[in-house]
Length: 98
Image (tube, rainbow, N blue to C red; front, side):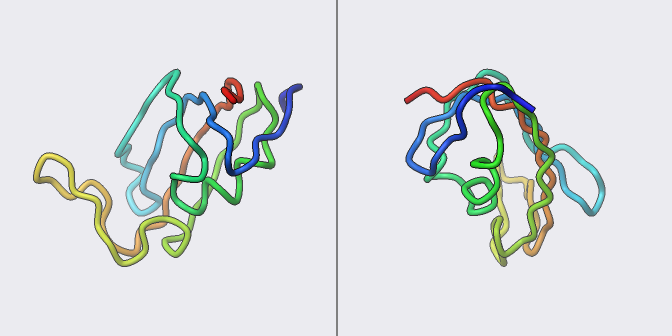
């Protein structure tokens, strides 16, 4: 899908995404029209997003070693992502920003 260019790890990308846990399908994060630098994200994004063209969509199943590994992610004093979690991201690559 998509008709534009493929991003490279050094690119800033504009995306819409939803992140869920495989274990319970619970959404831990959602954003629309957000700019992210690919090289600053978890390894799973850096590995898989170059397969998507601008305007395309991808569903990424990211094992814990390419996500947060043995670390948990805590926001507002609440564990949002437990250690060793497999993550699912639904991502639309709106555009490559630079």
